[in-house]
Image 1 (cartoon, rainbow, N blue to C red):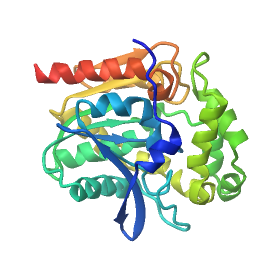
Image 2 (tube, one colour):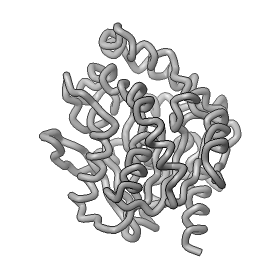
Image 3 (cartoon, rainbow, N blue to C red):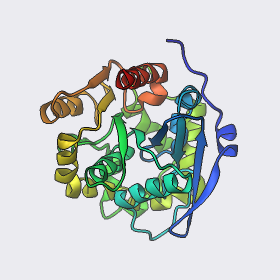
Image 4 (spheres, helix red, strand yellow):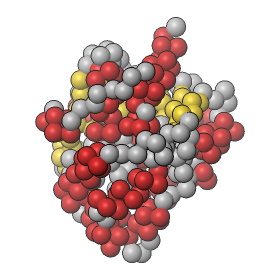
Length: 293
């Protein structure tokens, strides 16, 4: 498949709308018609991560995404106790705000995978209805998650300092480690990723956002049990050479999940939706078409 054109960050930002959630301003995007598809981004970036996939997906579905609390162009309150469970509440609040009252398809990445796991557990409890769930690279299982150094430092006692010192240069160094060797982000892409992280003094809350790593461990058994019990169709589309959650994570998924539906993208790293968006789109649409037959 050919490369997808994507959406310039300035155009993306101008298309956003605002929602109040727990007293905070949340930036969200929605377009298209059809079955609702919720896109959930990762750490430390934002919903613009999906910009290559946005237009082709909105041609088929009603696509919905927000910058979660503490991310992108949404509020980043200082001193806030950020939680994956609250981010799941936010996704449900966004769906309610948009009047979505039918089952929802989910496509998630990284930190967003954990939010999707929580939504899947809530589906099992009858608190939300999901139609399908597709995960891109993320720490579905704490035992296979290999955080990079800056993540470990953010979680340490010097986390607040590490966050304040975080810069575009440090972002570039981190991304160089986790992107595929032949799919590294361009200088302009790094500028845009950094713009979203830096907005609203984002580095000052990074050490608080990173608490998702221990929160994953707390919820691990409940989330994995939901994935093992659910009838919701699931697929993993995973960049194989990602050192954080690449082929080794998919191997664990295959051990734990019955009849696992997994796709490994060779040579692709942690951000398949920006490194190989055409391949991700192809495998996602193939998954959806199979559900409809």
